[in-house]
Image (cartoon, rainbow over all chains, first blue to last red; front, side, top):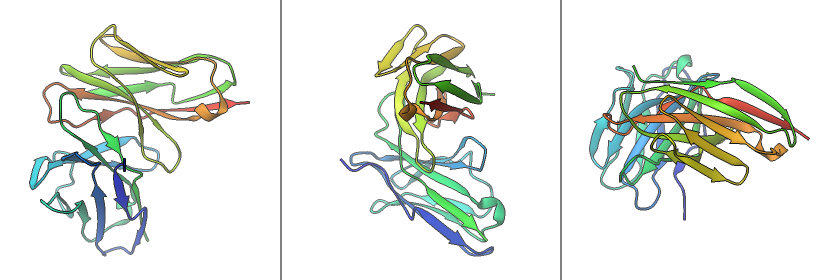
Length: 114
Length: 111
């Protein structure tokens, strides 16, 4: 039973480049959540998606960040024109959405902006 | 505003020395309280979900309890492999499914 798969595990980008983070949910899960963990900080919610829909993006920065979960393929978190402050671990979680949430997390993508 | 506070920030125990981690929460209607374990460089690993005051759940040396204002994670006779950061999170009844996390308690168990 494959868990939540994230890739790449590590990503280095120069300032101004684009970063694309991918997340494949657990089999049977149609709900995806993205969280960001800044150094020495807790996990912060960014966005909640279902297939082809953004349900809650209240935690997403207003500029440069976008997320999608297409009908086919993984969920993508896209960061345009990265800055040093975007360096963090980005985690994806998935759930089947039934009842109180029990989300399972991937191993994360560690983004370093140089 | 929904909020989760964990204490202590860090805890050092000798192997076999039992203790408890605290998670205090303020939420507009609790839908669920969650405990996760996170090892360095890894994603959070799900441990427990608690839904209502008075509920308790156990797994090996860990036991989680819940009141109307806080949750405790009791660790009985810990071993060095229990060393990790323990995260508490809540889901509010009126939100879409996002979790609000505390800062975590980093536990170190020395042999």
